[in-house]
Amino acid sequence: MPNIKSAKKRMELSRKWNAANRQKRATLRTAVKKVRNATSADEAQALYRKAVVLIDRASTKRIMHPNRAARLKSRLMRHVNSL
Image 1: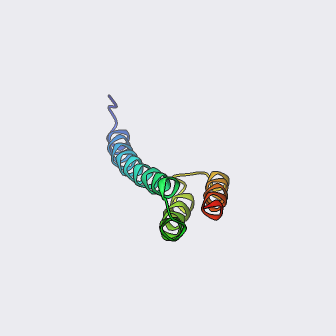
Image 2: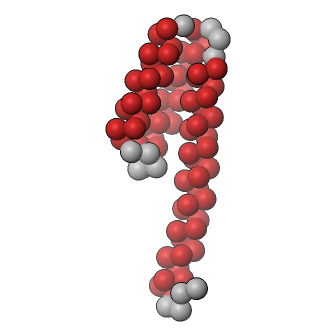
């Protein structure tokens, strides 16, 4: 446990942001799973658009590495096109 006030504050803020990022990451993973589990092409296309928004936001906020975001979008697009 930190003794210095600023270190305590940093620890609390870190805990807060860690929880927020975990929630955003979970939402993102759910969106990706929905795209992968979509049965029709139209449904997959709509879900893909929503997932791309979340992926772009996550990479902008550095919740996800930008290269990983690009790779994920590419793979999802290939999947949607194959339907």
